[in-house]
Image (cartoon, rainbow, N blue to C red; front, side, top):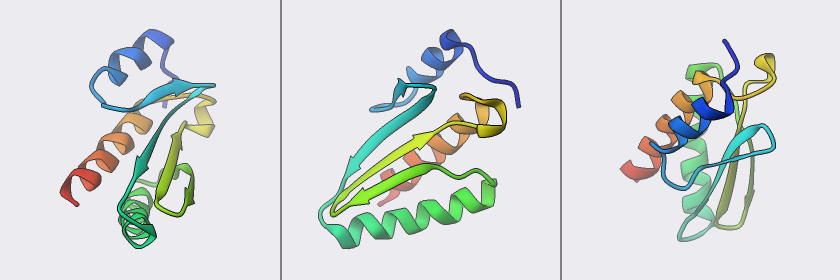
Length: 95
C-alpha cells in the first residue's frame, strides 16, 4: 500500500465529516449517549477492523470514542485508512 501525499489526504478528507489529518494520521472523535452505546459501537467497529485486517489506534472514556488511523507498514496514511474510515462512518450512521 502506497503512502498518500498531503494533497491526496486532504482530498479524501473532504469526503468525510469530522475527520482531521494530525501528525501523520487521520482521526476523529465520536460521542454517544452513554458508555454502553459507545462500547457497543466499538464492538461493531472491531469486527469490521478484523475483517479488513486493519486496526485503529483508539481509546474510550465513558461515552467518548477517539479513533486514529494510519497504515504502519507504509508509515503514513493510505487508501486502507480511508476504506476503514468510511466503514466506521457507515457503522455510526446505522446506529
